[in-house]
Length: 434
Ligand code: HAX
Image (cartoon, rainbow, N blue to C red; front, side, top):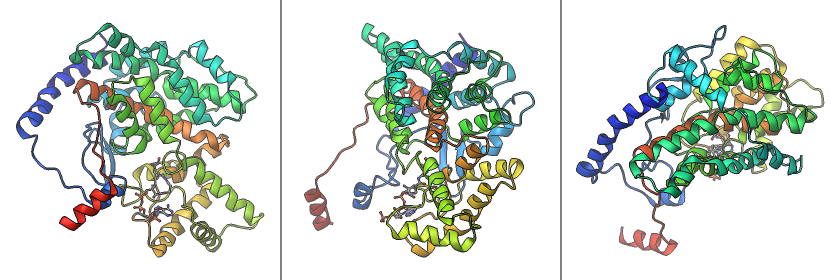
């Protein structure tokens, strides 16, 4: 058994009695009430999901297994010559809550290398799709197609005890996750690089090999590592995490569940916002027709967007109430690597102006930037200018968190999710009785 699986098994065995005790002895303890505003308003703030993989504080931002982003980066084993940790070590950490040793990390690196290759039928499928299909559609379809190889689905058909569900789920995750950078790079090179592909380099880790297969030189390997880590998990209620969890709750396997989560990530209010930020910014520059961007013309363009009934992409959040630390982390990267890049200066100018504009408008509860406001400029700087690909990068990262979560869902025996709905008349009746 691999050391990751062994540690995971131990953690699962320690954790199971905590859930059993909570359910059996304290199942009636209240976590809150649900209001009409929450029932109509997307269940905002309703506390009804459980995960230990990450927690989002509205003012502090995300913590992975109790650690902030800088603490996480600091704690994990680093790729030699790089300031960033191995994605594989980060996955070990998310899965078990334990910081792996270098040896444990390298074991996952080797395990992932064995599972990188895409089945030929996935390549065949991608090639039948019109080339102008959105890369997120291709990414989701590629994941879904691989469902035929699900070990969980096969073992379920053969008959398996509920206590064992997590093991084939884990096996599927270990098979699926390493294929995602390969799938993403294949889609990228097929669509945008004249269908010329670069084979995997067996000496490289997940982040390094992704940069290599994309055909983008260093420090893009670090960009990939940073990007996958930052986008991995944002607790359970966001659309991609919740969808993956919901679909998996029907005992659909990891392939079905992740493909569904990726479809949610493709929405412009969620992961697609990173492409929208670049689209907005480039549209703004085009309209300037070569004139210098200034705070005044940025402000005007933001108001134009709001006045035409559209959202300012990259700003606002359902939970966060301050600048997203994932934004800050990427901003620091930009300050180190591309401080004078004109596009970064425009993005910085938007950061200076947009919160005031949103505050003045008075609708958004959070006027601060989220992760998506800063990520595209880094990609653009390193030559990845095809912005409709940006959400695929997000998707590879997000898979790390959501696949960890559904493995734990199976380990802890979480049931099928099925909240209760009411009719409008019932809400009106509740108002009369209140
Ligand atoms: N621009 C304009 N209006 C905004 C806004 C923005 N950036 N953010 C919020 N608002 C508006 C909402 O549309 C809503 O308007 P209505 O009352 O007319 O419906 C009002 O302000 C209140 O919304 P809220 O409670 O502050 O925000 P929500 O929880 O409803 O929505 C969103 C959160 C992230 C969807 C929202 O802030 C938004 O649309 N932002 C722009 C898109 C974006 O950047 N999405 C990525 C978010 C992070 C993420 O998931 N990344 O993947």
